[in-house]
Image (cartoon, rainbow, N blue to C red):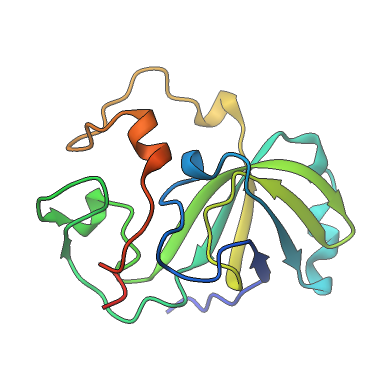
Length: 159
């Protein structure tokens, strides 16, 4: 088994699991800081040249696991791997956020949809040449960008 330990903590304006954005699109103006532990400071070198980064983190408040869930934006049961639900076997989350700046071990980000105090597992740069997909399908997810932006969390994953 691979041991994964946090490399820092994510600070955001969201202190409760309900009524927060369900994706970064719904948190376009929300700012937060990513506090990286000092022993990883050297790893932040050259990160400030990127406009966006992936944050990988632990859904540390998830209390259970489920292989089928009713996700936000839907009313039907879905396989957890076809959703962004926190009830995954390893409780790992991911968000693409705008990188505003780096100051030593603090990273300022915009478009953050993460609970305050969330353990940070990793950071990766968003690179359009690697990551951009011009033609894609979104499976069961048929809601518009405007609907995603206006949807907030409820208590379905914290019961």
